[in-house]
Length: 368
Image 1 (cartoon, rainbow, N blue to C red):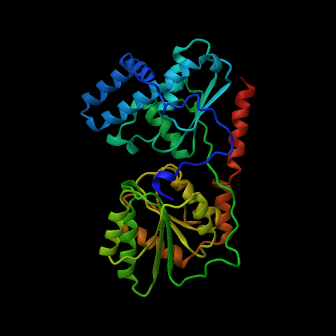
Image 2: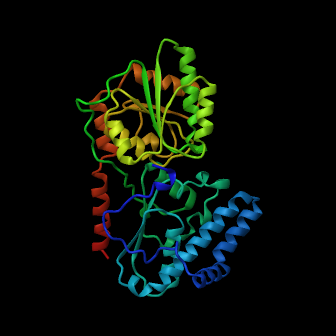
Image 3: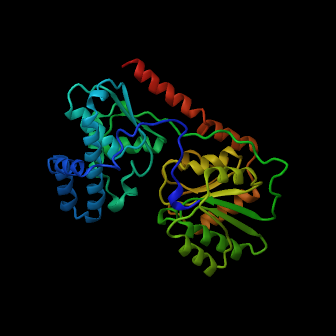
């Protein structure tokens, strides 16, 4: 599967009434005029110029363009939206701002506006220049934020001033998986590592290379095998770096989620590794835990709410290569029990998390 083929299929019909990817020329002109009258945009622009945050101009402009284009679509469908009870935004980004603008500007829109909050739509440090466009100034029009971690909740409150009564944690989840069947891959000698991610700077695959190279030097008698699933613009660079460090890896490239799950189901006594600089709550880690696979990961975002000594090793900042290598060796030598792994899965990332989230949304609708 190529990087351009990652769009997920949906099993039911969805209206594209608010799709902004196919605007007419006149619509683009009108949305541009909206930006010229967008006082929040000009205030934000003044803010980043006054602080010399010039790297932040591009994300600010993109947010402003996209939110105003979506607002144009919303304004055209306002008659229908007046009958809406709840509007749910999966991301707390420009789309949320557009609906917040609509609630503020268009009379008789009384829907409840709710949103998830993940990583790049939440943490300013995950954005270019360390700046979050509009910095959630629109929270007054948002009825409820649903961050996916405790860390996200704290960040919303501390950095954007979102009132505590508007924030409620609802974790993501994945279905429980059955661990390897009789046709499973045989157990290999030594440490077996699996990583799943795009090859981007933030994912820091070079740290995995360095940790394996260090294990080779410290414990030359211990074999280490590494499988990486995922493509990305930096993959050739990482592959060359691995060769230069004498580190071997089976590079499986971009694959479907079905392939990833099948591979994890047959990975006996493997260790999942994620050493990113920034995360929300990685779905890949939840999927590993659902198969009873322990995890070694850096303590970023909500990762620390899933990973502990019970199910692996959490690497605290600063992320020293020696700590990562020692963590991998420790988990290999003291492999967590299936009971511990299942306990953390059930408590933190069970697919049942969605049931409570839906119940919460329905209760909001019933109080409408």
